[in-house]
Length: 180
Image (cartoon, rainbow, N blue to C red; front, top):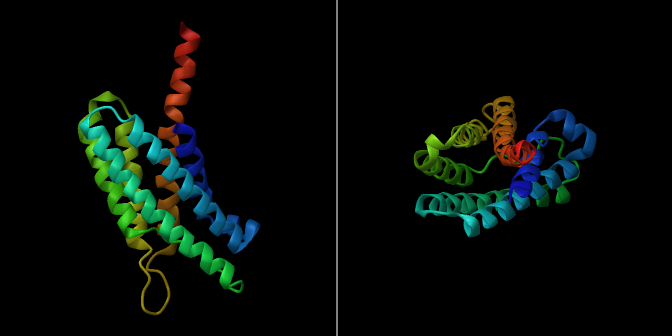
């Protein structure tokens, strides 16, 4: 589960950077986002199965619904990149519905487990940043986003929060094993 979330998060950390799209091209960037969304969905499905307690289960189910919204939006962006090779901009923008699901699941998880360390707060921060990204990526009728740089930066920052949360248990288990 943690590995799926970590790899998915890494895709969303690097995908929004203009230098990355210049390096891999629009199609490569779209593939990065789509693969990241699929990895999030795999992690979310495992989280639903492994959830202990009612609040943890609800948070996992709502988050999993959000990952499905991201699957749809990233697939749509991938399809656009493949069918419009002349397109020269970042092809994915955060899904509003997926971001709302993330915010709700993050709030449920935070409320249920806030006293269990730093991870619920960092996860919730990531959810808030994804929400800000969705709002600032709103596209005006002229075709230009409201704040593309903010949307890209908050997508990467939110994904970095998720990455830290995904890797945290891996390193804490390794540290705990060394101290025994």
